Image (tube, rainbow, N blue to C red; front, side, top):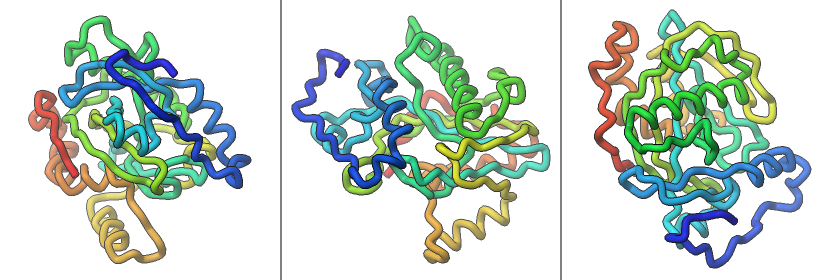
Length: 253
C-alpha cells in the first residue's frame, strides 16, 4: 500500500462481508485500483492510500487518516436541488439520500497540483467533480463546465457507516446552477429527485421521524444544518460568491 512515510498502517483488515461480494465486486475492483489524497487538518497533502483502506474505520481511528473530498450541489434553472439515493452496491452509506454528488479527489495528475495554492486546488476539485458527475449520474462534461462551479467552503467531519467503514474527509463544497441531462449509473445511484426548499424541509422532517426508513448522509445533513438554507437565496439571486469562504475549514460533528 502506497502511503506517505509519515504514516504506518499496522494492519489492514479485509472486512468485506463475503456474502455481499457478488454485489460489491465491481466497486471493490475500482476502490482497490484508486488512491485518495491524504491531507492533514490544514488541508496539506501528506500522502495517499487506496480508497478501500482509507474508509476502514480501523485505519481512520488508529492512524487518523483524513482524505480530500468534494460535495456537489447542483440546482436547475427553477432553483431545485438535485438529490441522489446512493446505490445498494456502495460500501459506505448505501441507500441513503444525499446531495447531487459526493466523492474524492484521486491521487493522479489531473487532480493533483504542483503547488498547493487554494486556487490550484479549486481547479483540480472542479475537474474531479466533473468526472464524478459523469460517472455517477451520466451528466455530460459539457453540461457542467468547470468554470461554472462555485466553491463555497470547506468542512472537516468524521462519520461511521456500519461499524467497519466510514468517512473522515476534508470536504470542498461546490455549487452550480445548470440544466443538465441525467442518466444515473445503477452501480452508483439507486434513485434521483429534484427538490425545492419546501420539499427539502419535508424530506428532513421524514428523516428525523424515521418515516419509511428514510435516511440522509451525515455530510449532507451537516451542510443542510450549517449552511444550505443560508446559501439557497444566493443561489436564486446569483450572488453565491458573496458568501464564499474558502479560507476557513469548518470542523463539524
